[in-house]
Length: 469
Image (cartoon, rainbow, N blue to C red; front, top):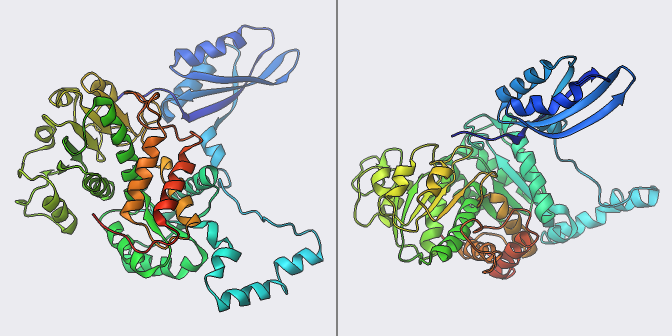
């Protein structure tokens, strides 16, 4: 699928041009002729003979960025000094930091914040561990835990390479919910080691956000930690995705005037995200769902079913369809893809029911071209920011954890997930609702507060355990 220039591949080219020539006027034309987009042009130093200029522009990818630089260098009189990748510049030295919330200006303040005064606080907590939520960062701190095995769409790239992503997640926690989150990148993919490590660091946190841990290992890690810990454990790749999908689908079905209980839903993807989406859709009332993995439809007659796939086979596909994804999509009202790029075509979408809903969420390249899908479907959503209806987990996890922390919850229930999805869907008002606006922007001011309030109310102050569908 063709891509357009994106700020993700934004570069700043520092160059010199003759002060009196035509080069300045040719810079923008050079970038545009190479297919880039100029977003800023700043003169940083001016002289009688030379001008130093920073040209900032967006490209499609790294090769395209180099082609833009080559085009600029071809302009007569231009001398390239430096090319900076703005995304890498943003990550230099990391994206988060720790700051003290209290002043340490003199000996008195130091004596209260640290020794000897802090000893009295420590002894109070020793007498009553629950006071840790009131007197320490535990009340507002989340550990973002990964083993680096399923990072974004990049695969098993390891804990060091996962760190920039976990830093970004921590920054989102702070920006959208005021939560102090910290990346915990583990150099192990052994379930026992992951579980034990998280268990022993848990006293310092009010919640655990599991992130980018591959299936099926993630299921066991989450299950065991829920049993061991008295703080919420939330696997965002599963439950955050499920909340956003259900919220978006709730509104999409309103647009096409269909009910979740009556529609036929075809899903592509039976991994961590697919499994959680399926369970929440069933809990919301969906009845007719067929799930496909890379081997085709999941059904009871397959002889390769592990525990997770066996559960899917027992709770879906009542008619026992055993064909491929293309056959499963035929006459479906809804397609939800959390799988792989380019596995469907516009012609496949054309075989769906009238007023079809298509969620092609593989990122960055969806299961089907959004442009092709729009020719046949009434509502189309993706995981991309350059199309309407972006389904992004940041719509869910900050508010979910804000509500959990405020309620001092010790677990996450399915009722909380449903409440979060309903609250997120309700942020879109009836006057706003339409084919191109079924889910609010991540910057909508009401998203995190609405989700947090719903989770907090559902938690009822103290929630225990996790109720499966």
